[in-house]
Image (cartoon, rainbow, N blue to C red):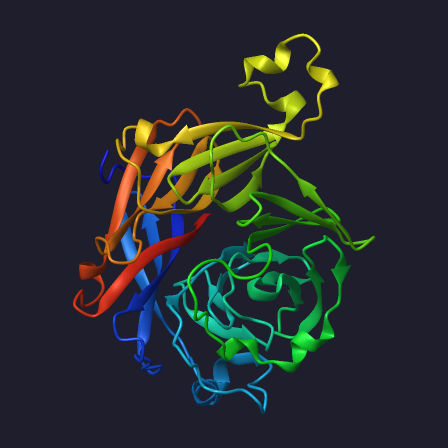
Length: 361
């Protein structure tokens, strides 16, 4: 299973943190993107300006809005690396703590750093025709940015599902605020965001469901699932007629509208139509596959043709490596490639390294 040839070329974003939380060194490029093609792999490094002064030092790369006058240095430096990945045209768009990086597909060179003050702990991003969609996770806000880094619009989903424009959040430069507590942020802790026709679909880690916002009506609703085991949803993407999720405790969940969920024989029993149901699910436990164990972390999922890709392992204070699995919907694993921090940096300085988002090309 180890290091078998992948069926597709795949990009994996990853994040890492250091034992010394005061490490900044913005002038140094840090590893953040892993490219796998067949059995060949390559790591790409990029600069990560942290504090307001760092942004001024790389002004030639910045597109959007510079630091606000009230911006202050981090009280606690956040992780380094890339989070969400998306693609449009000749470019890869990669989320970071306080910006979205525009990277040319030719040579994976950095072209621009798109940024404004509503970018903080960027998780998933969606590159659509008229710009980028991201989430200000700690404020449950969906943020729209054009391809020159300018803030176009935003709205907040409150815990009662009302959708409002909370303008006070623009008074803060969120780019230089770190997460200083353990656990999720925001009411919902939105992770993945994707535009599907005239709706925004958001995965909520805290509620283990989709929150769907109608862009025309500015109204939100839930899309629920018939889970039959505890889950901790992280990612959720649509592929063809189904949705694919990771649960951070080592599970893959596949969900579909009830009439399309052919994998569940109970869908064909008498009177099933009398019950209230939303999305019907199928579960893959990674410990029951060829992997043979429950990974200590599971995050990031992407699908292409008949393959699923997911990253595993890499939590705090564990082995300084993480893996990329290539598998199908039966749970059969075709490849398991690992990125070891010893191959890219000094293990003595690092605390964790974990995959985040996956982009098959």
